[in-house]
Length: 111
Image (tube, rainbow, N blue to C red; front, side, top):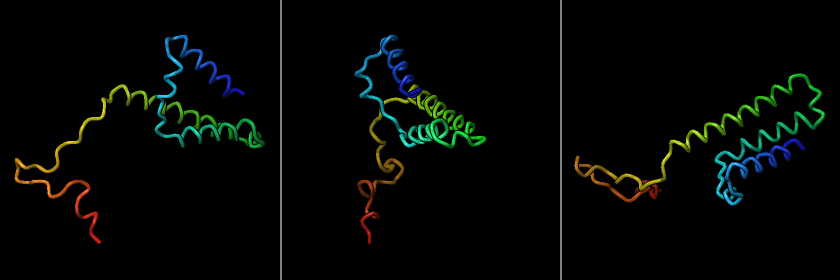
């Protein structure tokens, strides 16, 4: 229930600050397993019988910290990253190293 409330509040805050619901289709999660793991730990720590075990709250906090840290790191990377460009030319013909083959190279096809 808490997760649902957080999602609704996040959507409302995004719309209130000028965001569009259509932008949700452009969201890419690079490490979906981290998000799923954090949610599984949350469910196990809060809603299951495991909540009675001493120390499980620390595992829950660590999972949330990892999720928040990943989100901040991803935002930092996106801010500093440009668009993908063409790869550099193969070889160095000006130094006497012409490209031997197209990528990935002939060695891949060798038995």
